[in-house]
Length: 234
Image (cartoon, rainbow, N blue to C red; front, side, top):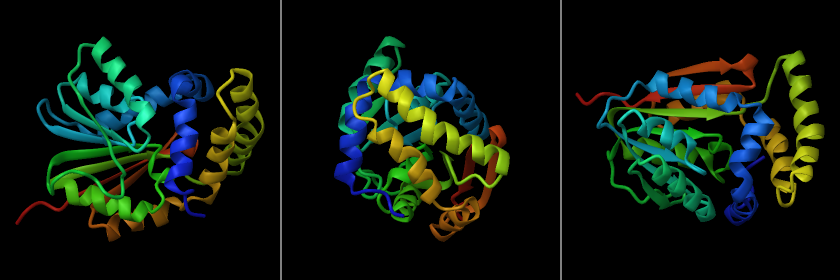
């Protein structure tokens, strides 16, 4: 199943933008912070290197890297997310750049960044393979793409827990804390179960021009971190 049209994605996430951070912490039991730290450690960017955090939401991944001296540009399709990201950066005294941008048509020159990160966003792109090709285009030779995402879970135990929590518990919690309409949180499990299997996604990255693609299961495979590299210049 493809992601819904861009206008629907924008409407869903614009509605929950004011409570997005609170809901992520509560609904993931704070584990999402650990996953973002793992992404930062795996990329091992140096101070002064340039990162595009795509589908940046309210800026958690962007801030994770900016605190290490990385020069970060955050971009998201849902404009109402960006004022919250900007406010968090200002409060932390960090200088980041923010842009409203579609992952399928990035407003950046070729070879502009040393790394691109996407945390739980590629699944929401209408054509994720086109998004991956755009990531490849804006990366410099030797640059890295890191994708943190939910994929269909094969483990019977983790899969059963995931389906119960995300189909039954999560929408109820979202409703209790008044997270706008609960459509975004019904969409989450449905989109995960319909998304590519990890090996298919790795194939998409290779087709987009990435090499040395590595896939790491996090928290029993609830989330996965997939990292690929742009070939070095001859």
